[in-house]
Length: 496
Image (cartoon, rainbow, N blue to C red; front, side):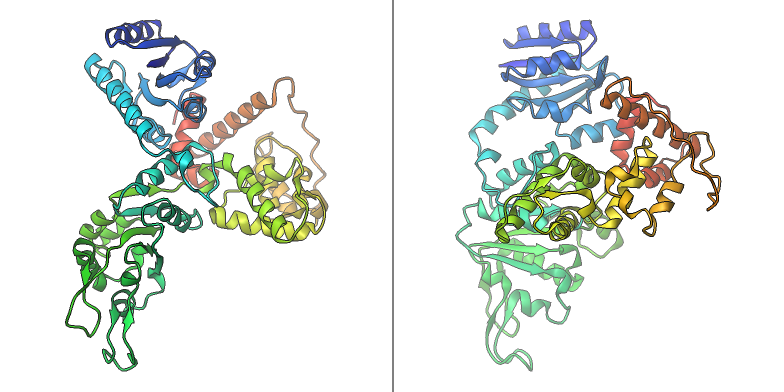
């Protein structure tokens, strides 16, 4: 087995190599990210010890590339500047451990041994590559981590809680767990807790006997019984009435229940998968959700990322949806113009994948039988958002996002007027008689990546100058998550 240390501290690298020899392992050292990525291409690296601050980049930002390298190594962060936000970002990126220098040799060896043991056992388990993930699209590290949990859940009968924002695909993941489990031959029964009325919830879940109440003219099996030998999916479980939560907790424990109007209990051997877009811990604190039920639900917890947290998957999702629509309407495949995907990637997608698919279908319809999808085929609000983003992050013409053809559309002139002026007069009122500002010459002497980095840093500097230490306000304005914001602050060595 081989592990790799990526750290610009020569002494740390030598210490780790000495540790490797004592453990009978091979250890390679790299002093930059570039050298580390070159080592990883060999594909025989099991574990990577990674520093955060490196001469040619930020280790946390390189996590996706490292996790997707040949062999998909486990990553242990070894940094001299540990902080809670950095640890959160690292764990979200799928690291094995987060150690702060100077870390005791015993702790470092223990973390390495556990990571290697985990790798050995993981090889014997079902791989995510073996899963049937029909209609589940994504290759980002956050999604790969979710696929790992689906593979784990599919091998057990444990309860699963799938959480995530609206439109992230919670039911899709629940169905994937069922389809890959030993219960795939049984029924997948969906219970929409948000639509259950408190008066009918018991009858719906537990069933009833004839005569149990006025309209009960025959015996009826409840959804829990219908899920016998299969999977019961409680969608939006946070909406389950308190009056039924205690009874359902007993059903989870005993797998026995009594239909309404019956004197005898019946059994149902079901596997439970629940989903919610709400914070159940917060509901527990509010007294509207039982803590003991929450513990029962989240034996395995899969937290689905929002679409804005996996921007790299937008292209894959767009191709998947457009190809599906082409097959449905028996049309030849469509191509994307160069401006099409950048517009999608500059939108924050509050409705996540569901909203993206809706927008793509509208663009598909607008394109008719054209072979190419252009930005102009996208809804106006999406293009205006992209134009605003572009003008605020470097002054690219809004016309490249399909906004030029609708310059008279409501909102388009305002998007240009609200772009921050480079002379510091961003707050000056715009007037109809004002003459157009002279076009600013951009510095294009370097690469596009370098230009984007300069603009990103300039944006953050201006944001922090305007709002001081008010991090919450900066997050609201920028649309960044807290972990992403702090990652950028570290990247450009800014002080908050």
